Length: 124
Image 1 (cartoon, rainbow, N blue to C red):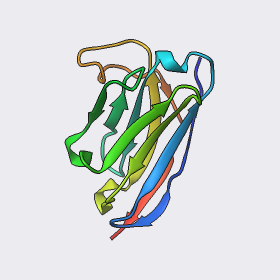
Image 2: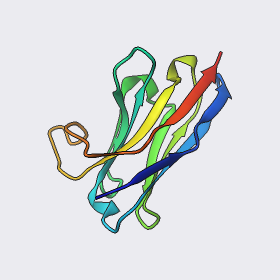
Image 3: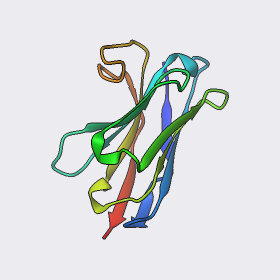
């Protein structure tokens, strides 16, 4: 069992930056592929970015490429998402998630554990 706790959301002006953090409980953090999802009002939840177990692989949805950066510190059981050049369309609830089982492609498939979500609001 893994518990995930996000932090770092808030209100920011367009063009600004935020850094989200997600701390995981348990001793097997390094065995999980980690992802950040988001869900905006009236829209489906989407995978924004993911990172492999050792940080060697990353995935970004096209809309955030060049603006968001995912990283992880396995010694701290923490995954981060640096969000720069934020846009109004980035406004959403952001969720940290974890999965152990790989898939094809590696970043897709079912994520088993979820955080409670943190609100990011970008004002234009």
